[in-house]
Length: 64
Image (cartoon, rainbow, N blue to C red; front, side, top):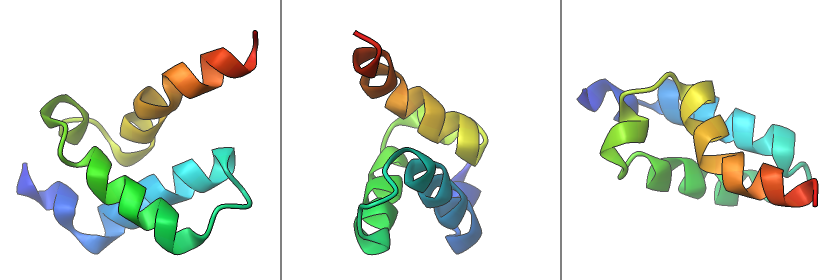
């Protein structure tokens, strides 16, 4: 599904990342969102779901 490389999909992933890291530069979040696209499993998910799954280890560590 190459459609996930379109700007809208990347922006949606970056937005989800920004919900977790509000102080990180938006360009850095966009770069991270593009990196998520390199994972075949995450590419098959909706943007918010892909970002949430990628963030899962970070979010679970925050609760320790």
